[in-house]
Image (tube, one colour):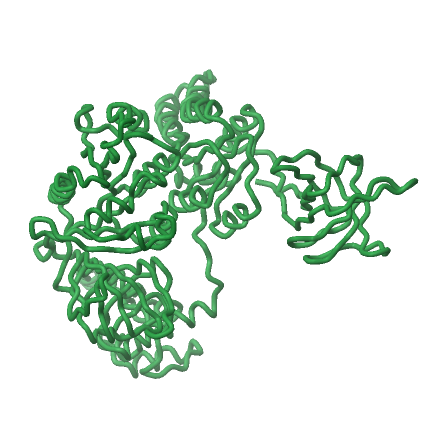
Length: 629
């Protein structure tokens, strides 16, 4: 008996350990038949196994995420659904030996009127400026030039919104940013914005100091200003290349192009030409004659005329390919901009572009993506807020707090950019200096390690700072950088608040620095007080003023936007400044008392404790409520 027991134990010991299931990546829109071929499990076996769970499927049905999870459990597999773009990106980068150098994609950025389009015009030897309204770029274009028989692709953007909007959608398109600064004007607000955007994107910067032909040009002053912005040029002991140019006189343009190619060689921009073509949509439009047209820059692979492709939720077949000059193309290589005809619909800028084996596969993926959009409301990525900062610190999700600072004057910007980065260290120091109780001496080592982590956790990073009102560019940068916007002595417009809500970006306004710093301290320690949330209702313009005895002063208004409701809170705005805050005590339409008046109707408004109305004033109605962290 004992020998039999020993044999049983020996058999149990000899059993091999259960192997971990191998992860299998499945392309979205894959059918059950294709899943069967990929896993080696017969389709009929999968169908039979899923029947008890209430699934009735056939071989042509598309595999959803929930179905993939169920099949994983039933067959001991680890199936993961990925987009076809991700699958192809993994494939493109899987073998470093297949990666080869590709031409650089360069974005021109800088302040308005510093010569961005003039520079591109000079490089291309064509009259781009003459085609633009007022010499300012009105659209995004991508252009290819050759220098020493080597191609360079230039993207010309109308400001920084497009650059950041593409990056916010995950489209990493630019390899090098050329920052254009006018030698007679120096570093301006949009120059600082461009620097912040490029740094946050992690894109290498080159500086082109333009307009050196002007009498007022002061190159050394520009270099000094750039060093203050953290852009240290090579001749100032840094590692950023700069070239002194005149786009108008075409001075040193050859040197600029040589430096672009040199930098691209140093950073080794590579692509895989042996995979199916993939890229990013730069712009798209509906042409009356051509139908849906998309401008795409190819990043990997080679696009051929006749290739089927998927582009966001759109699909198509490359019916015709054109370069930026309208010349027909048969094939498109990495970094080449191309205009593509043959889409079923107009895609969005930033949508990934991916060639697929055939049109049927493209349709299948498109239908799958559209069905997902119908089932679930499309959601924006969740962004950081002060209310939830402490929770994220606790679970180790946040090690820094990115902020964008906008203030009314430069003095306030300087003060805030000085005190806020040090605030985290100051807080951590206070925590570490807390005297320990005798019973806690044994935990001394643990406390020291915890203090070190606390210091890291409360690091504050200023992504961008400038004077002036909060702009669309600030909101898009905050969205891309997962930052919070702090406004000091400025009130964001409703348009900006609406965009911030759409992008899930938190905007906080303060009039006292102490309140600002206290809020950040409290957020870090999880003690943030309930915040006052403001909900915009509408705006009305005062057209006439009525003074009625025993009643008071009534503002005769025309509702321009939203609605005005009785008992709502309101602010009176004159010349873009708030001159009074109060409550709407009465609201009339014609002679009747009403609860609300909507857009494009007239009304009479009386405010509590305010009579000094002036024609042309704006009454903005809103509701406030306390929200807990």
